[in-house]
Amino acid sequence: MAQNEADDSQVPFLAVSVDKSAALRCPQRLDVVSAWVQTCRPRAVVAANQELVATIWSAGAENLARQDDEGWVARVIDGLTSDLKKRFPDARGFSPRNLEYIGTFAAGWPEDAIVQAPLAQLPWYHHIALLEKLDSPELRLWYAQTAVDQRWSRNVMVHHIEGQLHHRVGRALINFAQTLPPAEAELDVGSDEEP
Image (cartoon, rainbow, N blue to C red; front, side, top):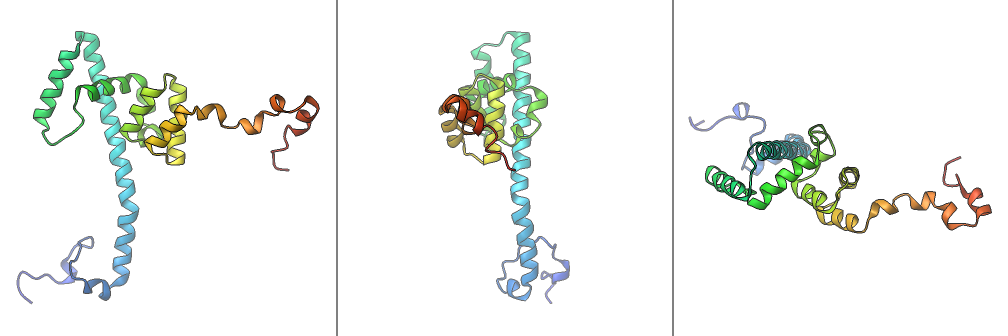
């Protein structure tokens, strides 16, 4: 064996082989590694998103504290935008508008709420939509939880917010008194429960 060739015992178990015959030699190993990748990839994305959301909240809280202390104005946000773009030239999201959203985000959620599910599971643009569309923290939390549970895209979530889904949820189960004559309403109360 040539000096620069490694035998299989020295190749890390997560190394990806370009040799297509390797899958034919050891299909079980390919299946195991593929299962790990398929299982770990979504968890890694969720963990990265949770860290991003926590970082955005911390940056927003810092901006709000400085704004209170120093009386920040738009020119300060513009300066911060410029400085961040210089320091992180390949990064996105440092526009003045986005930095204002970051402050609104920190003001809109208490610190203990943002580090817990479901808020930490939502992507940043879901949070922007929640903050733009809803004034009530309770409604924002309800839509956030429902978006996570139902795996809503941002557009689907906005559609439900604009359609005021929270007013319609459960209505079919509890509106007997409003929609049926009084005698029938009394009979139907509880008819949706299992025996």
